[in-house]
Image (tube, rainbow, N blue to C red; front, top):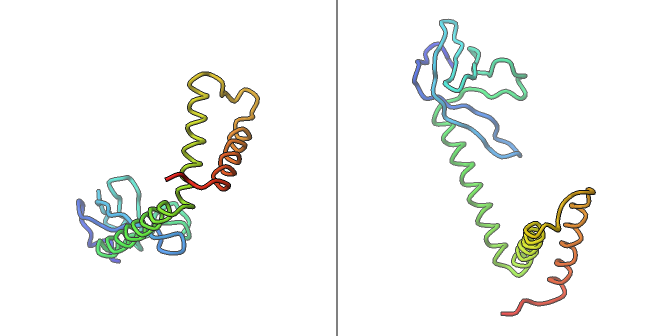
Length: 149
């Protein structure tokens, strides 16, 4: 990428990663470009003439890319998120998913009610243990009994 041809207020892609962690990119606006090719974005990040972020090791650095490439990665990320959300909704429609949701909401309700009336405080550091015991008890009940339709 020839950063000396970039101009202020121009849109540019910022590539983060596209690997087993998922995909991430953003579209940013250029604040200024130095005569030597250093690019400063409006968010304050600086990039060298090769397009890599200044001050960060190359392994962890973001780098500049075309707006089209960034948009493709953003679209890929959104499609992945939508797919995961649809899978989660499908899981929640199953009996196992409904049981998990029931357990989660029941534990939250028990804690909220105890907090409301002042009986649930972490004075002695037993809050996590108590929540786990409630979760185990409710999970056991849900697994042993069928829902009433």
